[in-house]
Amino acid sequence: MKNEKTLIVIKPDGVQRSLVGEIIKRFERIGLKLTAVKMIVPTADFIECHYTVDPEWKRVTGEKTIESYRKKGLTPPIEDPFKVTERVLKNLQNFMTSGPVIAMVWQGLHAVKLSRKIVGGTEPFSSDVGTIRGDFVLDSYQTSDKDGRSIRNLIHASGSIEDAKKEIALWFKPDEIINYKLVSEQILYDVNLDGILE
Image (cartoon, rainbow, N blue to C red; front, side, top):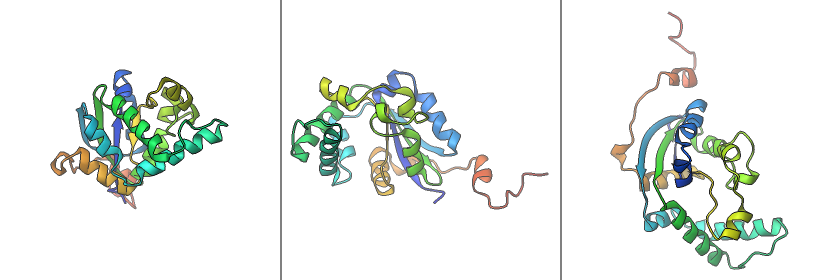
């Protein structure tokens, strides 16, 4: 479990707002280890591959979107989950290809769940204070829907260990992920904390 990995992508809005260092600091502070990093401008096809690594993504995303409308007392613009997701994906492609992104692999105990906790909910407006999205973004689904665009929420974090494996394989070649030790790993993982006292 100490070697669990997750994919984190700082989206174009995070890069443009010069929040790269602040975002990286959040992951370092909790004790995760950066094992790969690159800056790219992805293509629309690549973004579609990224979001559809989970074959259920289109259905689940559409259903969640429709349900979120209903929870807010709003009528969904489309009732077919797959048609909703077509629109979501097109907006994501426009957003994610608008400028450079920073793709990273972070490693450590509970890397996937901890990263999701640090990042916060998908909608910044309803994300908790203390999370990346809750602290640095004011966007909401209502605003992004009205504008006909993707929500600007700074960052992508893998949703599960299985998704993380597939996403990492899509974004990085095996030789781009570095295996190394940090001094702090002794404090985080050594059972007896041997070697601290001289």
